[in-house]
Image (cartoon, rainbow over the protein chains, first blue to last red):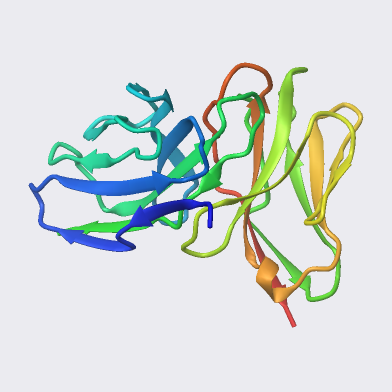
Length: 113
Length: 112
């Protein structure tokens, strides 16, 4: 089955710890994205990558880091510098072409206490 | 990208058509209208997009006014599974892959 996976579904961490969220896709998509969603809000873009070894900051990149060493994978690290890390994190991917739809993963709900 | 305005919530009886409006009065000539939906605690799902002509696919129809300042997403026969938050997004055409700017959307509740 082709698709985009995120793991784990739920993640709990103590304040001050870095945590890495996984995102993998087997759709042969070039572009990948990370969004954050807070309760009752829309999605906000954290980082995106259009090709391997390249990525750009989105609207709320502070306190986050990413890497894109493989086409299939785009992990997101939530660092201790992120002041409000508790949120629902969504990964997406798409072909690198105009107007293409983005395919979203099931999301990871991160709780930091 | 142009800003969109949607009602925060709507109700629809199962089997009836759900008509979800969206205002995008500042849309530019090269901006497309996209619709996504998000079922509770899942990732958003693409529904449909259009530029100025009406569009239809297996999920929905998109009606865009002639002046392109507003549009309506139509789910012709709503079911309980269509209960979700629906996002109207305006996106620039051309270029390579770009971000989607999500607002707060319309929460559609389909009832028996």
